[in-house]
Structure formats: structure tokens, C-alpha cells
Amino acid sequence: MAAETRRAREKAMHRREILEAAKRVFAKKGFAAATIDEIAQEAEFSKGAMYGYFEGKEDLFFTLIQEKSDDIEGRFMEVAESSRDPETKIGNLVEMYLSFFEEDRDFFQIIAFEHPRLGVKTHSRLAENMKERYIRNLGLIEKVMQEGVSAGALKEIEPRLLATGLVGIIHAFTAQWILIDGKKPLTERKPVILELFLDGAGVAAVT
Amino acid sequence: MAAETRRAREKAMHRREILEAAKRVFAKKGFAAATIDEIAQEAEFSKGAMYGYFEGKEDLFFTLIQEKSDDIEGRFMEVAESSRDPETKIGNLVEMYLSFFEEDRDFFQIIAFEHPRLGVKTHSRLAENMKERYIRNLGLIEKVMQEGVSAGALKEIEPRLLATGLVGIIHAFTAQWILIDGKKPLTERKPVILELFLDGAGVAAVT
DNA sequence: TCAATAAATGAACGTTCGGTCAAATATAGG
DNA sequence: CCTATATTTGACCGAACGTTCATTTATTGA
Image (cartoon, rainbow over all chains, first blue to last red; front, top):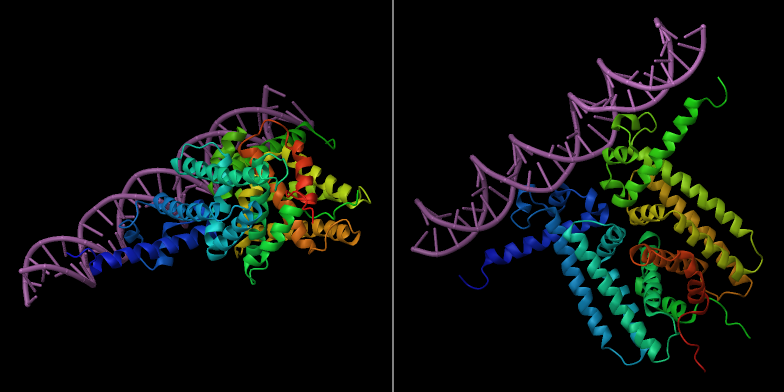
């Protein structure tokens, strides 16, 4: 029994295939409307097989969120140490999010689907965990903003509001990209987003 | 048979109560997870009674969206004719959206819930209608942006991108308000939003 | 080749849901 | 008060769902 038998390798691959299938279905239907049957069909397994890999629908969903969240948090940490210059760091941050969503638009759809749920009181550990993650994530961006303010690169605005504004713009551009102009790469939007966020849309008044 | 018998009056009131109850439930659960039973319970009617007022779950949902969308479009038209100065008009636009969502945060939740669905191909007339409405709505804002650009008040950026950025900021602040700091009025955010959108978050470089 | 084990299947189960309907209740007009 | 009509009820239906499990199929090691 080697550390990697063919069986173990295949099992791992099947697991991943199921996860990918689940992601597509969740992205298309949302958690509530997605069905195990459809996920099984998409993954080309029988319904029963799913339960040899996951405990059920919630586990499937939770595993997806968990993996991708860890991924994005890791990338964020890299960005956080990428530069001393606030503007550059913010640029890297924007680029990171854009390419992350471009690589995996299904994941963006999923969190866009479930995000509104966060504002709702619930007793689900899943929702609680997601809300925690979201707030921590916003906190990280907030810290980057705080640095920018301290360094004199950003205006003296509450960092949370700056963070909210920036992620709002990023999400809106991503949603727009998915909805309408999904052809050219999303990352092309980086310059506009930075210009909007840093300099604004208004023409500087000559006061 | 007067134009307004007591029966007709009460029927209309019951209808409204059911709609309000449905709105609360849809806002809390989303369309897919909401159940007629829960709406009936929230409205203090039996399940069967619901079908004397609406054709079913979809009709209920659709009526809600329709009414509120008409409302917001009406308000938008007022804003569109409110001023000749682009900056003032944009300010009015922001204020309109903020107070609209402040008045009815359940509606914001509902559209936030269903918005991601728009990117998904579907054969539902409901979803098609919502997507149509969303694009038309964005088009209206786009026109305001176009005016701003023409008047030299906004930078030469594609109006659609400007519109996307602004609504992104507004939605993000609204979501944040619902999620965390729901105490002070949302409309207080108007100045920050305008500052962010028009002047940006960066400190003007002294080049 | 053959038993032992692991994985995959799909029928079946219990539950929940949207929607229906005969019966019960409330209202209105005479 | 009584009958016709409108409204409300909750039991009920069929379909769909998440989950389970006995059975079948495939793989392993000897």
C-alpha cells in the first residue's frame, strides 16, 4: 500500500470532478435551487455516489467556499506584502481580485448569490462562517486603506468606507463583465477602476 | 354597489398585507427558499387564501418586483429633470437611491438576492423581465453620465463604466449598512459617496 | 482464478413544497 | 331571518427533494 495507490489517486480525482460540477450548478442556480440530482448528472455519477465523497449538499457547498476562501486569503497575504507604496499595493489588490474572478467566474456567481444572505439572522453554522469570513476579508482591505491614509496617499476617510467603496466598484465591474461584455478579459478594467477609485470621475475643479 | 364597498376595500387591504408579508419572507430567504406556507403564516392567512389573491409564488414575487420597479423608475424620472447641473443631478440620483433603499431595505435585499440570477441563461419570463429592467435602468443612469461627460463635468470615460462604478458604490454602501451599521440613516452616506465618486479616494498628486 | 474489499448504482423512503378543493364561515341584500 | 354569494380554511394531492441502502460492478492482492 504505497502512499499513492491508483485507487486513492482516482478517488481524489473523482472528488475534484464532483466539486467542479457542484460549483457549476451552484453558480447557475444558487444553493437553494441547486439539486443533488443535477450535480450528480453534471459530474457524471449516480446520485448515490455523491455520498461516498461528501456528507451531503451542505458539505459540498461548504467545502467549495472553504477552499476558495483560503485561496483568496492566501493571495491577499501576498498582495499585502507586495509593496511599500500604498497606490501600488492597491493596484495589486485590484488586479488580484480581477484575475481571481476572471479565473473562476463561477465562484464569483456563488458568493454574489449567497452574499445577501449574510445580512439575515440564521442559525446555520455555514452562514455564520461565511459572514465571519466576509467581515475578516473586509477588515484586511480596511487595513490596506488605513496604511494608505497614514502614508498620506489616501484622504482622511474612515478606512472601512474606503474599503467598502473599492470592493463595491470591483464587484460591480465583475458583475457587469459576467452579465454583458464577457469577451475581453476582466483584468483590462484595472486602469479604469484605479482611476475611478483614486481620482474619481469628476473633472478637477479649477478652484 | 358603490364604487367602494367595504368588501372591496378589505380585499385590497388584505392583498397589500399579503404582499408585505411576502416581501419580508422573500427578503429573508430569497425566492427559491421562501415558501408559500411561511408567507401565509407571516400574513396571518391560511395557505389556501393566498390563491384568492395571487396565482402563486411567481405571481406574488413578480407583482412585488413590478410595483417597486415602477416606483423607482418614476423617482428616477423626477431626478432626471431635477437640475441642469450634472453634479447636482448626480447628487440627487444618489440621494434618491439611498432614501429608496432606506425606506425599504427588504426590497434591496430581494434585488440583491436575485441580481446574480440575471447573468444566468433562463427560460423564465420573470428573470427575462428583471434583466430587461436592470439593463434599462443602467441605461438611464448611463444617460446621466453621458450628459456629465458632454458638459465637461465628468472625465471622458465610457458612460456605462461610470454608471457601473456609481451603482457599485451605492449598492456596496447599502449592503454594508444592512449588514453592520444599520442604526444611523443610510442617507448620511451621501456626501462620502459623492466625494468618492467625483473626487476619488486618493490625495491629489502635486505633479 | 478467486475470494475480499471498495466503489457505484438506482430504487425506495420520508419529507417538504406548490397548488387544489370540498367544506365551513362570514357577509350582504331582501 | 334567510338565502345567495364571497371569503377562508386546512386537509389533501402529486411532484420533487435530500438521503439511505441493498444490490451490482469493479478492483485488489494472493
